[in-house]
Length: 439
Ligand code: HEM
Image 1 (cartoon, rainbow, N blue to C red):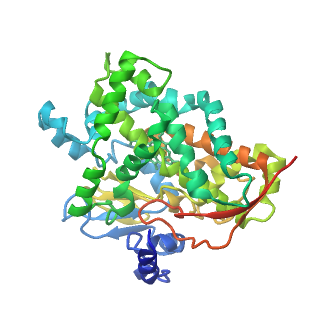
Image 2 (cartoon, rainbow, N blue to C red):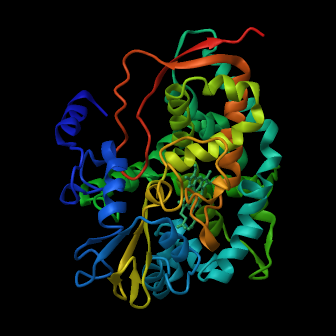
Image 3 (cartoon, rainbow, N blue to C red):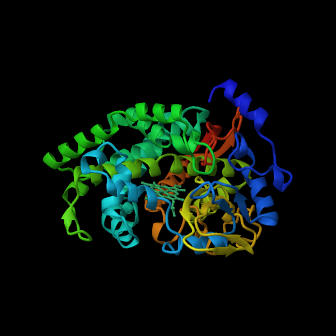
């Protein structure tokens, strides 16, 4: 973001003081989301967005309570995903036409059109690599993290986002998928283009305008072909990576191997889900460490607490704040508010995670909080984030290595603390000072 646009955003952002000020999607709103959640919890835990439901005659609703979101995500028949209509339309077009469409949606149509296959997709295709099977990457992640720390450990200051939090998931994901590391800068550009709707998109549905959509299309040029080349190469020269695995595996749920286009779609989903999310989890964790005196040393002395810290920080500062990914298939009532059939539900994970009915003193970081993983940062139920395993591992290893090699971290001069626009919580840069550990 350049200086001009920062000033523009600063002039637009306003801390909400009453419900009428609450608009989670207006420019600059990301600077005051947590104040807005407090108002929503007290005054409108189910908050209407008029005329923005499945048709202009229907509405959308922001769901902010933990109990409601938990119920919704655990019942996919009653609250189906919003992809059902686009997938129905896609089923009607020819296979040739589908080649031109978004590979992720095309692969959803054939590999996981219903919940049963959704589960199979996770268990058979992604779990072994980025879910519970992510443990196989422990050494690779540790090396990645230590190599990055080597680049700044002899300085006094680090720009933590560009020199650490961003490259960690980029390098890790490239290794997992089996992309050459020399391609990282190009892959990063494609990754950025893929998440463009979640950064620049308008409203709760993250819609790009015509110009932005064309720009995204241009920037994504070549990605599908690149993955296709990788797939062809791995079919000829198999390696120990996820793309090779996808070329060889028999998907038991369908009793067949995957097509190149399907593999392309699975890869697209990994890239769209696996970069900025983990980047911002680590970046916000650094901020929490700077803000809580003594916490760094406490974790340094007792590394078993790191996992509790990363979970508690993802609860308090959820990287993905909310998504409009469910609809109502029948009339519903939440918190006494009628939500008719055909409504779109904007699930505000971040707000559920600071819901005082679920978490005592929700804005306090408590390392002894019971069952902290009941937070909804990765959602829950059958569609829970498939990459939670690898993201958790990256975070824990990142902090284990930093705690081992530093004695503290502190905010450096010159931070603006401006957040990226869109649905993610994270600052665009974070300058830190640190003391190198010589022990
Ligand atoms: C802190 C890091 C992360 C956060 C906060 C996060 C959060 C989420 C959330 C909230 C969802 C929506 C689930 C739902 O609709 O119920 C999701 C879906 C998804 N995530 Fe993650 N995620 C993270 C890391 C990752 C990583 C590392 C990967 C891949 C390596 C990944 C891949 C995906 C994919 C592919 C989906 C879509 C599943 C579908 O098709 O519905 N995520 N994630």
